[in-house]
Image 1 (cartoon, rainbow, N blue to C red):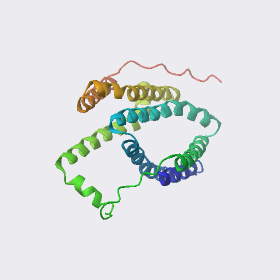
Image 2: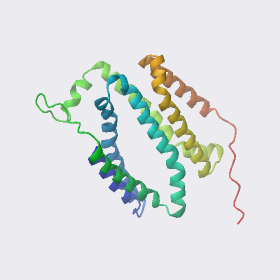
Image 3: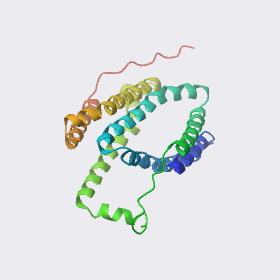
Image 4: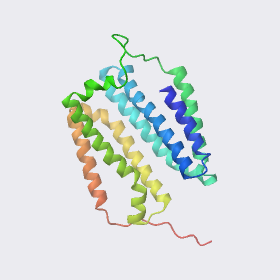
Length: 230
């Protein structure tokens, strides 16, 4: 976790020094790889630090924190980018480095179970890949995230092509998305207590599918920013 967040900080600050498309691509690629090292450790730390009775609530709060960061990050990033496009990268990199210091001093040690012989990284995935139930769950999650990130990545272009909205209004849409994620993260533990784990997952997937269908059928134009007269 610590290595990933430090490398993410360095790669993000280097994005502010990019001189062209390919240098930006390389630095963003490095930031993505570093983030992939960090994110699984964050989710894995919850069941390691909290008892099973509180893990669902802790995961909901963690997801709500991500939603708050997204909701606040969009307008703050816009304000910084008004001054210079590189300032958001430098700011995020500096904040990530401060977070790395906090992780080093505040996070408890979570060493893996030392029992048995130490296996290679690939060997640890063999039991997972040989399990038919696990393969089905991984495939379903892969398809879900494939569609989710595909929609998320191109939502700005879709809004521009479909409704001719400005970057400002696209930011408002992303803020709305963050608020929705915040509400879902805070309410997830309550819904989980009312429904089963599978019932909660099924309800969430059905609601998300319905929302995407309604979004694709939207026809009403959004308000456009007035043209600049200066």
